[in-house]
Length: 464
Image (cartoon, rainbow, N blue to C red; front, top):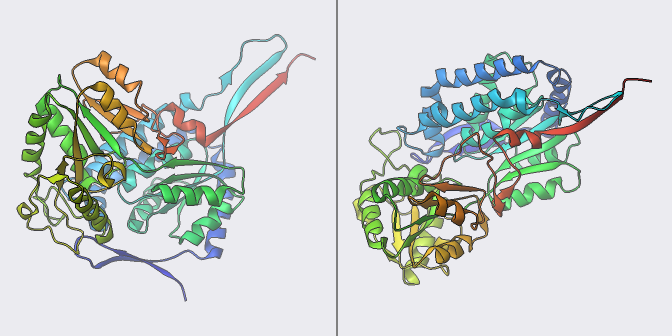
């Protein structure tokens, strides 16, 4: 009997999607098909690859309403925001990586040498296995899928069992764009099936986005083979508000960075450090803005804060809040202001905590939900020390008018991306990378092509 995968929607707890899980034979067949397709795909002119990718992007844009609706059903994001994942971030990243591919993949020449022609060519790796999460299922996966295809690789895609329709949409879009059979495929797999694929000699690279334990599992599965893995893992991203801040701008953007997508963002703001001179003003403004959120059914256009992806995830956040309060923190948001808030469900009111410290899980462990702690600091040095006191290092932000100080402080913060006066955004022209338990490797920018290709040296004596 074929095993199935069931997706329960956080909207109302009903069964939304059910799909058969790939068997060992089906995984084997898909990998064989990917290898066969890659032999021709790597020789397909880059202009033709680009045209196919552009048509696939346009297909997503043409079908954005349907894509957005099923996304809200699968993971709970308010429908007023779901289209933006396609029309803004997905489109921007895909088209940028397509546009820079010819230069990024161009042969690298050496200095002239009489009697020789020498250059380094960027060869595709082969089959790239992309393991994508549910929280930003298009934004996270496009970082690897489009550049992998542009570099001449074939792709096998496995999405979280919470967002299986995203994987199916990718296949649908690229088929409509005219991509050859086998160049991109999706599989719904168990953990055992994923391990089978990672351990298969036909897989040349694994791109994983997810939790730290998930990253360890992927690395363990790949450890018996000489292949690379790209990891974008957890975050506990800090924001530091200096006294010279544009306060209205900082409040609006830091609060949004903490609570957008119900706080379910790898690079969302999870802890805030505020200089003592502006602490009271910032906290007052943040509380006032947070009280304006509307928690409710994500399919209602009036909703600005949807449910978390599942009740168990909401319960982790509830535990972080309860532990912090038990240790002396003060909760500033009355959950009664949010009638949809209800224990035993994924519907959770946003919360701001003060009087917090680093003995509390809410300041040290990834909450991945609509809660943030705000801590007073006396100066830049204390802020730097606290920002660095973390197992994670994906992004960090500073809110100030002093560019020189922002750069100086950024040089001393252990993070993959350092923002000034913005947060929770990926610029595709910049490398997306993390340090410590936030992962390793790099996507986006010209550097994002390096992990998806291997150098091959051509050393030709032309005069004999």
